[in-house]
Image (tube, rainbow, N blue to C red):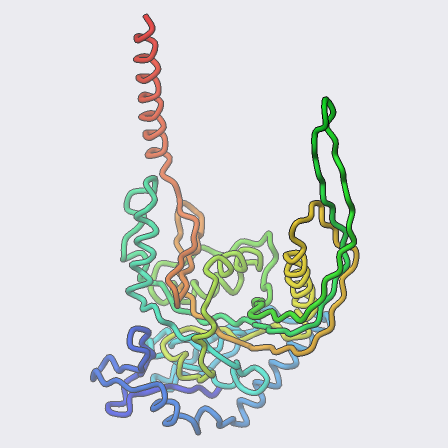
Length: 397
């Protein structure tokens, strides 16, 4: 597969996007370049599509079409590419759009997977550096009093990787109307009697509604919910591959939970997509089209609109919606890549995934608990309670 590698215009060393400066920097000679400069320099290469890329894209489209028809397809479909720096042949998952050579470590973008109909509209660039992400992880661990000793240290999170995940964002303008019933209850007392009056009202609401940034993950489930991923290997190369393989193969509910919990992202800071932003990071291309989630998005839009209309029915009790109708005036879809730092731990036979929002630093992960520390704390608390109870009893003697 043809690849695209971003190199320093001054010395030819690998070039990567640096979240701190929002510029491209060369770690070899220290040169920095703006995103606009690099995009202009590589514009022609990014738009060039070779016959080989077209053949690979055709194969990928056939895979997607077969999946949509419900036919069997190879979930372990892998594609090889040659590293432009060292010439090594590297195997990648079909959904991988940007990675690094596991032999020489140079970042590589697989351009054909992000072109044509698979080209994202926008990308939210990383703002959080790897060091800042590690600090955020350590801060999260520092808040847990019962964390096993030695679990949290910076050496364990050296395998943390920045990954761009694909999402659909949808904006919609609609005309909505609803009919509902509501009650007003009045109580009063006259003499020795208490009275209650219940009045039922028929409520009508309609209006123009705009709903923005309804999002849905654009990756498919690769593995059944009962399947368990293999434990990560120990060397750096295997860990890098295993971190991505873990997220690719882990069943959708867990992956969705992990990524969902690091939302929200400020999509107002999204920029027009350029492959150059992926240099130095991993990236996944979308596997889900509009037609796959149109029903989910429509249902969600309806629920949001109903909630907005219900919110105007103030002053009533027991509001019950009888009917609802809407008409779409305008709808816009955006295929966007979102930045997430990920790291996986192996602890006592379990794989513990952690995710950090690459824009805001919001963290998610389930940390282990040291049973000994928890038991000791329980004993201390029990002793304090016993002492207080004993002291209280002595006061009444």
